[in-house]
Image (cartoon, rainbow, N blue to C red; front, side, top):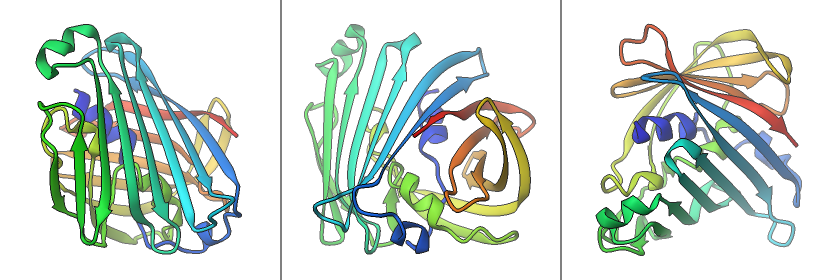
Length: 250
């Protein structure tokens, strides 16, 4: 369930950096708070907080901070990543995972730090616990991390019928296994009116497909391209299993 939850949170649509990011002025900060609701096998609620900043001092650096709180499991995850604005290439990633005390027996600690940085066309990953081995993996130019997709998503060309296939890795699921690239196919379906507590928005609906999972992302059709809603379908694709809905935007 944790893996599927993280898939929902961090799945985004990727693209080459374009006018959207070029027009993001140095020093600008954007904060988004989401409510995550799991519907299967039972209803639970968690919260995801995202902050995107373009550095004021170094104008070509974007910093993406993301925190996930899962109260019913006493889990907290925090990710901080730096990206080069010019090519949306990962510079570094720092991930903090806080677990309930009973997890200490499995990992030797109830708090884990996983750091990563790019070295040429590789990603060097260093873990604070032996249960998660440090490693170096291939990291080609066209690969992103799941957190990085938060930045790239809104730069794509939203054109009905357009598709894009890419790969990403999720550094926040290392406590289950080594990172395995996931291939994603995004398909822009059409515009659709979406109502949430913050209001009603005209949105682009994008279908996100990975092996064994299908999700739908909704981005506002204005120049901000705000992701206001994400839905993960059950394996049969008949009904939603999780939703992520924007609660606050600053």
